[in-house]
Picture 1: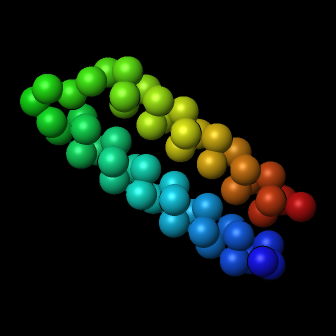
Picture 2: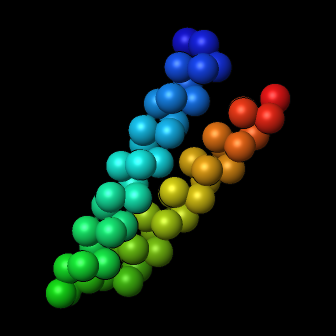
Length: 55
């Protein structure tokens, strides 16, 4: 897998997590712990994307 394709996959996963966070936040019975975990995953992906893009 090339770095470019890996970055593309990471960005796709990051976008999916963004959608999941938005959906959870709009849900009437939103679980704050689940939202926090999704945001942490999103942040880890963003850091990995930044690290690879700057390399």
